Amino acid sequence: MRAVAVHVGLFALLVLASVLARGALRALGLGDWDRLLGIAGSLLILVSFAYSLRKRKIVTRGRPPAYLRLHEILAWTGSVLVLVHGGARFEAALPWVAQTAMLVVVASGLTGKYLLQRAKQDLAGARKEFAAQGLGKEEVESRVLGLALLVQRMTRWRAVHIPLTLLFGVAALAHAMAAMLFWRW
Amino acid sequence: MRRLLLAGSGLLAAIAAASVAFPHAVLSPGDVAEGHAAIEGDCFACHAPFRGPDARCAACHELAGIGSPGRPRFHEALLERACAACHTDHEGRAAPRAVREFRHDLLREDVRGACAGCHLAPADTNHMGLRGECAACHRVEGWKPSTFDHEASFRFDRNHPADCAACHPKGLGEYTCYGCHEHEPAEVARKHRKEGIADFEACAECHRSGEEDEVEGRGEEGDGGRGRRRGRGEGD
Image: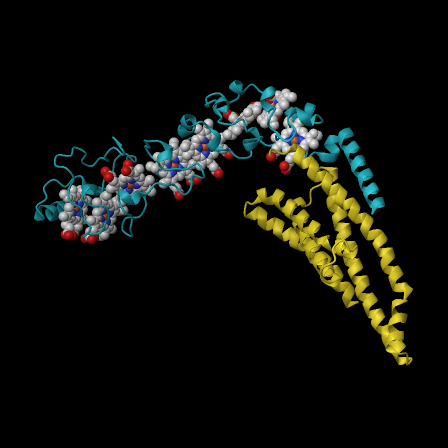
């Protein structure tokens, strides 16, 4: 229950932080920073995908959990910046779709984080149980690894998270290209 | 991975098609002003690709003709045709104004310098009987604070607050100290005669503040400007 509250809280904090930051920028007359924030936020999110590279072994240095942490932190922070950049504006469909998709992806990411945390707990529980059954250490590990249920749960989650991310990425890319077409350089 | 790339490209193509078919709904940051309603869907009437929104405004608007009667027509005197620096659009059909910020720095210098052509001074004590250009006391960044530094003329203090009319009852072009020291002209005269000063009418030539000890020597003998301010900046 507490874990659920934490993850819902992280999402609420994202929205709250961006609303406050946007208000502060307006108050300080820094409305021109909008564009910069959009670019900075996208870059942060892009860098956070180093995690995906590590997972697919395109990058092989470093520990995956550290990359996951990086992914969580950078993607969250980048999303705040993008939200400050976009705000609650609904005139054009494309940026609106991009931003909404981003919010859904963040929500899905937090759900994944929660599922993973619970999986770890379940795993620890299973380990204890097997050990109590008097199984040897190696036997316990091999049985735990075989817990198909947990693996399945995460696979099903990824089947949602990754296409949503794709939608967000493509919409954001198209939005950036359109913006560049219409800007003065 | 390949499936993702494929799906991504398909999506991008779909977005591109939607943008071409419905540019306003998909891409536009807002409705354009009433006058531009007819060209709202024709983005490239105003926007030139990669060259910003204002590369083509002058194709429709005759710059020489723009302006209200009685005001300088400055559109022809713009250093750059950066219309969007001052004008905005996409602010909705009934946007109250088409000007968001007035960029004085885009005006040719001679046009910009003539502030009074576009601005009226308020009728307050700071501008009574005003002579001289606004630019002597103001910058374009804002009317307040004024760059005018009265200290060089007379320093204000507790006894001499910045109540302009007390010393400049007839306008800023001249001053008098007798508004307050009036009840004591005889006393002032006596004090000054005691100091060997017979000609003391041009008070500020010696007094730049109300400090008794802060008295300057007199300017050139026979200075005709007694009680009147000297022309500021004459000859420089």
